[in-house]
Image 1 (cartoon, rainbow, N blue to C red):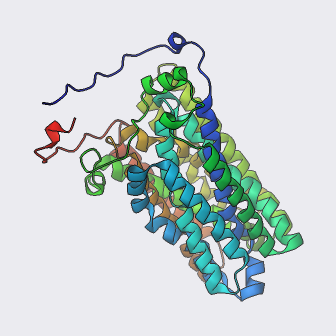
Image 2: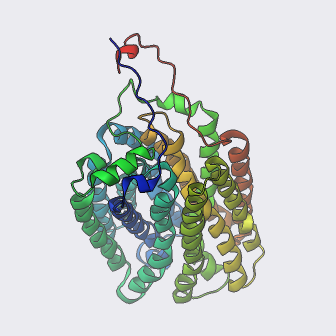
Image 3: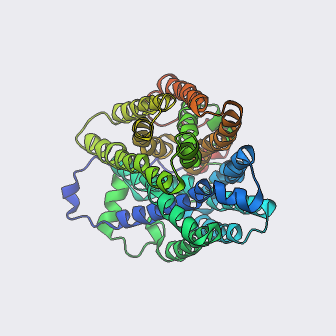
Length: 450
């Protein structure tokens, strides 16, 4: 005998529940801190070109491959990580991954040659692979739908604040103590974060610090149901990949990530080689566009989107406007192709990164808004797999283009073309941001699974 379907919870006003504690925001900050340290690990190599050339004798093309090595394993594991997150949950997968990425940072610091350094970067990709799909899934558990953009912005803004703070700090460490100590420092920070995550992160149903009022607020606000995915309740990767909404979202976000990783990995080298800024000033100047991107990420992609939806604006329209508009501002990267001074280059790069950063938390909130039940991790994995294909290609293509043309201009033109394709994906394929229909089950027992 089948049980009747659960009735949807009725709309409610927050004041009906009385004062709502903010345990969920503590969790969001923990996730954000993890991303911040992730990006310290990622940008460490971007300021180390001259040091690694002196240590291992690498050229620009080889440096491009080293820059992208992290993304090889990161990309390869996105789809498996999505499935593992749906099967085993954020807590267990997150604990294993944070331990692995701290080991990888220490491995890079101890590398005896290019081969062992490359292997350490591959291991870093393994460790950090679950971070973004896991965070997206955790936000779906911990936040009502109308707060999800702001919660996502907390950890996504950290991906911009990480380079803003990490590049100058790690650059100064490298200048004064050598490149090995800059990698050892990120290893220490990563291990401390592992201890913090192990101590603090739980799902809402397991968290003893979560009050009944706040739990009710989260659930009635449309939070994702907890539970491990299984064949009956989660949609297959093949089903998700066939959906036009998924295809449009992946294309748009891959375009974003191409420009993001071009700048994340090559910006200090661009300033020093193309605009003749010394290493110290290049790592300091590099922080300017990343600080601006942190601001637009949090206040436009997070706070403004949250505020407009909270005031009753059409949630899909608000998110789509910021997603498309922010990506359109990303086309400012083309202005950097014609820049001849550091101030002009930083202006256009700031416009580009600022726009892309505003769109990013909206994009990361979409898997928890459109995925069929039990499939948020899988959809997050698909999304980040597309992202990381771009992260692999961008540093390598840029290395070849710079080596062939002795200029970054054509590298910025390639990024512009990709962004135009991404805008088309958002407008014509993703369309309205609403739930993907559940797949039609062919399992004769599925009618009794409830």
